[in-house]
Structures are given as structure tokens and as C-alpha cells.
Image (cartoon, rainbow, N blue to C red):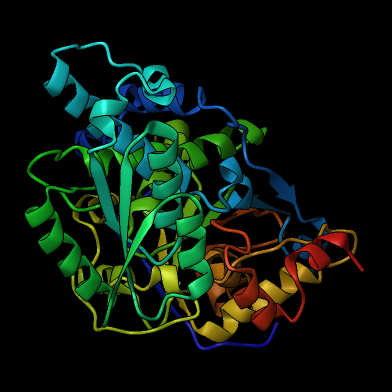
Length: 403
């Protein structure tokens, strides 16, 4: 992999001796997570996503062991997103059914079976999306019997829009940046009575962002269950921070002082988490574009940022070239490693590890060495095969078929 210009900030707040405290438990706690886990693992099609061993790449990069937690297989949707927004959506739907019927025991099975279809078919959940969030929302709405309206800016590919429509979602295109999309979403939601499922708190259902985090924490929880001892490092993508914050919290809960060094990776062009860490407070960055489109977020989410500020070991930015190289590296693996299909947004953690492992100064700062046990979290497969082929030069099926 070629060398790249990157930015690395080591977080002085994230000392290994610091316990998982009350402030963190208010955001992500064992009791709420247990409820989310019981719910999500009961859904048809649930299975742990694979933790793929990459011995050849580990040797090439000079670390003791390397795994890829690949979320491209989650519920057949192609990304990690079904663990979060659909779970939060369920809370809204059950709440609205309870209001309409007076029944307190509204089960997921009853929603799936259509028992309350007369009510739920008139409920609209909505969100801003660059593709994966919207696809998961559309899948959840179809499964649980409501409508989903998804807002996308004009730069999101047609293939991602069609995937959402394929699950029954309704797409609204908005000109401008992602922030402009969010603004339009909330304006329309207030007028139309939509329920927003996002990392922003709303008056009607303020618990939605935390519910999304509880669901996302499933990914880190599975990593713990799939390994026989703690990894030393986990690389995760950044964006607005809600997924990274969920991983940070769950790994901290499960491992305590033995928790791995969590490295949050963002596009250099759009790195609100890195800038917030560097300045010491949540900041807003300017509008930008990146190959890693799903990570282009101008402002960090408040509670996830608080979790990361307390617990993330480092914040790392990588340019688009590193993301492209990561996608191609995964498709042409080292030695006997299996090929992996990584989508453009899903490439960030792999790219971050690859550039860090190839830089002597960063290796030292991150304590990456021959004894390191590293997990990179790949959050999506080829969610738009046309875009994937344009970047990698091969179709996803061709990659998985091998040489």
C-alpha cells in the first residue's frame, strides 16, 4: 500500500486505568444492552457476522494477529445498520400502538404478523441517509409494517437509492450537503408528523439515539464472544460517532481495564471527531465530499462524542486514496487470506490500520508491534456494486470467486 498523508491524535483522556463510570453507563449500560440483544437476536435471519482471520496481512504489516469483523453479511442488508435504526424504530412503533390501543404488551411478533397493521401502516419513520441507514430503515419498515421516508442529497449514487426503493422505502432527494438534508428532514417531519430515527434527540422519542447505540453495540459484543482473549487494538470508522461510540462503550464494559486501544478513523476531508478531540470540545467542520461518503458528517453527535472523548485511544484521518487502496488490498489478499469485498464507506478502518502499520512513528504512538492483536471493523460490503466495480475494477462476485 502506498504512503499517505494522515493525521493522528492520541487522546490523553483515555487512560487504561479509568473505569467505566456513571457518565458512560447513562449512555450505554448492561441492562439496556441486554434488552436490545435479546430483541435483535430473536429476529429471523440473525447470525453473528464473521470475524475473518487475516494471517497473511498480519505478517505483511508486522502485527501478531489480525481480524476483519465484516458487517457486509448482517441480515442480508449489506451493512451493520440493521442492528441500530430498526431496533430504535421498534420502540417508536410499539409506543404509538400502545397510545392508540391502551395495550402495554405490544410484541415484535405481533407487529411482524400484522396484528396492528391498521395503525402502523399510517406511521411514517424518516431519516437522512447516504445509503446504508436508509436501506436498513426501509427493511425494518417493511418487516414491522410502517412506512419509511428517506432523505438523500443529490450526490448519493442512484444504485443506493434503488436499493432503498427495493425494500419499499420512499426517497426524497435534497440538493446540497448532508447538513442540508438533515435540515429538510426535520422541517418535513414537523409538518408531516414523521418520526425521525437518527442520532439526534427529538421531543416525541428522545430515547431513539441511545436505542440506536444499544443496537450498534451488538457488533463489538460479538467480537468479544468470537475471540478467546482481548484484542490490543480495534479500528472503527468515525462519521458522527454513534457507531464508534457504541463500540467504545461495549468494549469498555466487557473488558474494563483490559480493553483494547480503540482507534477512530475518518476521512481527512471530513473529520469532526478528530477535530473535536484535538480542540477538546465538540466542533463543527465544513462541508466536504469523500469516497467514504457515509462518514461525511459535519458535526459529532453529543452523547457518542462524550463516550469517545472519555474512552477512545486515538483519532486518525485518512485520505480517499487510502480508502481506495484498502478496497483493492482486500480484494487481492496476502498469501492464503480469503478475499474480502469492502464498500467505499466500509473501508475506513482497514485503511486506517494499513497506513498506521506502515508508518514507524504511528506504530510507536499506537503501540502496534509484533505482539499486537488487531481487529478492523468493516461496516459494509459492496452496497453499490457499480461504484465498487468503478473503484476496484472487478465485480463483487468475481472478487469472492478468487483468482
